[in-house]
Length: 234
Ligand code: CA
Image (cartoon, rainbow, N blue to C red; front, side):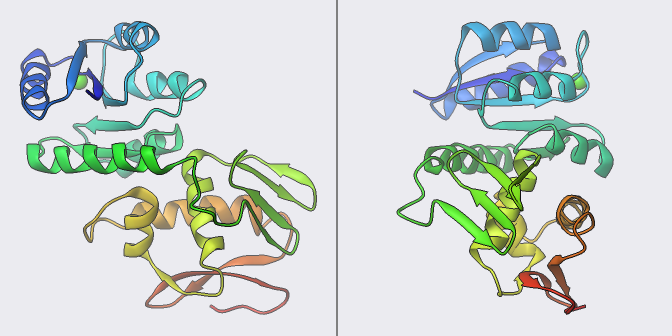
């Protein structure tokens, strides 16, 4: 039975989630504040965490950051605020996905299934290349390290996933919706702002310092990874 830790200080909502998720066959444990969440996670290894962002004791963002230091467990944030910067901060701390309250339980269940499935797939790369290289850039899919001319580049989990997907599809223009689907696991045409935000992060770390453009904007389509000195697809 897959285990889900539900971190939510609104007791009624926590109880509702518990009942719905148990009905779906998951084993559930509840935590009502940030500290209790860390304690629960320490003593009860789970397969996924539903994490409210606005929590007493310790914020959801901080809980996410601390859990990410030691575990790759999928984390879906629950946020009351439809605030992009809040979501981006959570995703930056390593959360896998978010749901804005109020949400339909069916959608949350679908996101949980996607996150658990993705987790099951990670680790084995189905016989694909273990290291992706393009000119000075090398991405190791097992150790999840990225090097530029032999120097390590620090990327967050999502930045890494995005770069990996772009490099796997080098020289192919990829739409924002496809990136949302493949990198974030959203199977619908959603808010693609987050893609643009992460492309900007990657460019700051990879393109700007080295003056070699790797990530190109394809107007009306999305983005394209190509090593191209001097040229520009924009
Ligand atoms: Ca809350």
